Image 1 (tube, rainbow, N blue to C red):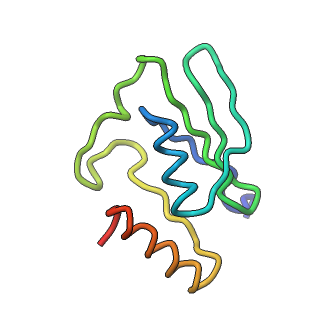
Image 2 (cartoon, helix red, strand yellow):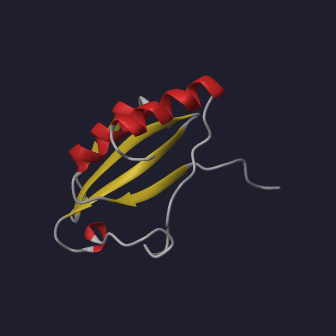
Length: 104
């Protein structure tokens, strides 16, 4: 095998502040960098283990972030599954998700 896990996942959002707040509050993630390419804002969110989310907020060039359709109907990337560091960490993440009404 020539691969050793995920290096990063690219995500499009319409509201980077809301995105960062959610990942910080639920998972304890931190912003580790930000760039301003010609098409918008690119924010790097550390998700642990040397991996990050590359979060793009585009300047009105792509409306895909505003589409909200049922799971498995969202487009090329439907979701990403994170591995909890432990059962205790999993339970804490679940508690935080429930507190934000992001899961049942």
